[in-house]
Length: 120
Image (cartoon, rainbow, N blue to C red; front, side):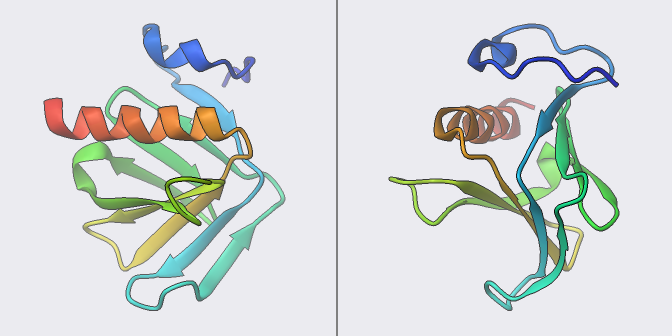
């Protein structure tokens, strides 16, 4: 898997078959309905891989989630000052939160997934 530079225009280009690897600071796995209580935290090798129609999250174990399976996404702590994104997959009891300090990149990823949920 290629680990190329992270730029804001990578989302405007064609996706390679192996996806686009995005290094993140950490990934926290939680359980739906328990708020911010965490079950597992990955700080050793946290990353997400963005594909055209799905996202792979390297949490305590790898999770491959289709954009259509995402029932909800939120920014943490809020929309005005995001530093992380939480994903709620519909067929899972878990939530996945990943931290990216580049706010603009985080917002672009959020918007990309949101747009793909509508168009696919």
